[in-house]
Figure (cartoon, rainbow, N blue to C red):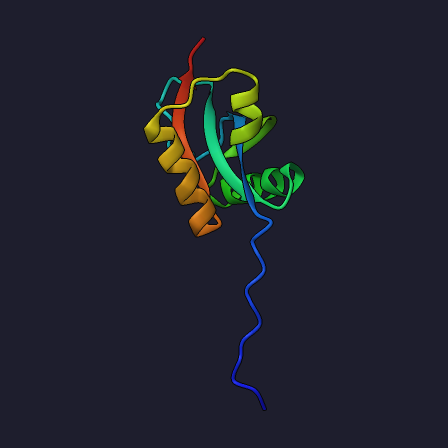
Length: 112
């Protein structure tokens, strides 16, 4: 037997920026008078559909009520659109990629 290892395939994972609207649910942790919230998330996946599925599943596990998801694409997609992306945002995207995770970068509650 040979001791040589096969070279590791490059990961096909990419990080997608998602805006998730959530409604109210008991135990959701939103402010008392909030009617819901918008969550800016960075999620890894081999495609945007996988990133959305993973994000929705994790948010449901966290006792939130995801209602709608809008995808803004990968870092490259956003740069091509002219979005300004600061170092903190880039760092969170890199962390999502390294940890193969979903990171909620920002939460904005909605009030009537």
